[in-house]
Image (cartoon, rainbow, N blue to C red; front, side, top):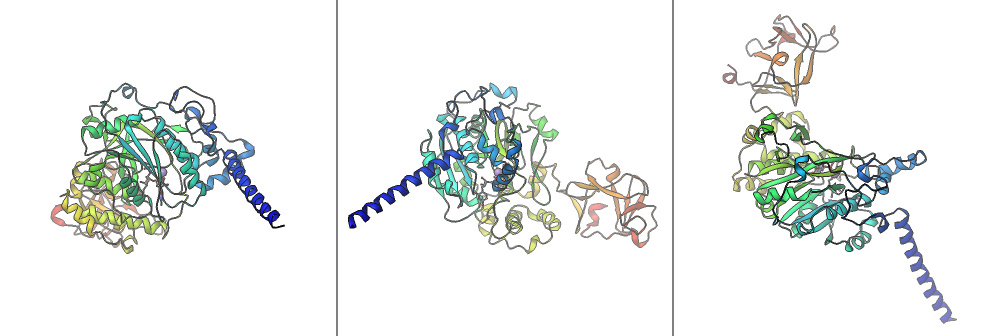
Length: 522
Ligand code: LR7
Ligand code: MN
């Protein structure tokens, strides 16, 4: 009787195990997760031969009519088309989007080796593994030390043991390390960097695809000068279709008054410096943040990251300012292309509130690196000064120790086309009055197109013309030079829109500009 019961227990337990195995098998083959059949063709070979299959050659994936509803549901999980992503092979082919002049460039044999550090929080299996696969398949083995995956406390089971087991089989060491608690990408990258060993550290987001020849030109710049920090051109992988679209070599990184990273056209001075050769690296004022290579010792030397920054945001401008102000160089290497899935919304939580976190990080970078220019940020983002930014003494003393240059030097020498006027007469709640005599907020300037008509904010054109205003600190008038009319405040009849009018010197035409230093004007 007892023996029978024991047998039943054994039987039941093994049944449970068999079922569990079957479940794992079913789970992963059904959603095509861990299954090797997804790797069509030999990884690393034939990457340029067009193959059949969804997304091959970087083509968009089309989802059938009957799957549209399910597709929309799945989209919410990662804020990209997860269904499309899951249909695409991890080693899909991509077009060679490089400039012709890049394709036959030669690089030294003895380039430094790199570790690739990828941090993630709740990333999709398919995008994460496609990132890893593309790194391994499109990097010369001799240059790739290892891949380090840092899990920032994800809450998805497939990112635990299944991930560790899957990457064990790869032909390059791939380590998975875990943050004990949700820490954000900055501290997660610091952990990945400290555990990696390559002479160079290359950071990538967890939803990238490297294209042919991406790595050599990056490492070659670092070999030439270890204080050069390099970014690839970031190509666009559509969040809707996963189509692969080449990024432009004619844009570079900047930022606006709210300290948002922005792409702007590469200015003429930078084209001239390269004598028009677009295959030469572009000096960029800022980096987007997610994709770059840096010499390990130099990364330490200039103070890695600000570990006081949380979750997301700010670290990209912080490291950009720091590199330039403390004697380094930041470049976009136009012969290197890596794709990134650009999303319109973030899929994950910001513990403590999105605004709070981003404002805190931005305040830390403004306080440490921007000197008096932090006021542009504070004035245009009301409420930001109420956010506590913690202790920055160690970052300030880093700046001291490295004897970094002032922010005005950066604006003048690295980013003269910046939206932040280096010289300004007045800084008010909404606008600044600049030394170029524009009334300006961010990249918009007060503009007049019609005599006695309303004024408008239009893109600053730097040509004076209709954007030229003369301030008279005695009469308190703002005269629009071209029309010789005065800025007049909104009134009932012109439906609350300020306009220019013949100067009458009445109250509606008087403007008090704060902080105007007269000697500078006249
Ligand atoms: O709490 C978090 N923990 C994480 O590990 C939040 C995020 N992450 C991971 C995340 O899984 C991803 O791999 O960090 C990486 C970046 O997060 P994304 O992909 O949600 O950010 P993003 O692509 O919108 O953000 C850009 O700006 C960030 C500011 O902090 C980082 O610098 C990102 O690396 C950066 N991405 C790029 O530069 C790619 C090009 C985008 C542009 C422009
Ligand atoms: Mn990203």
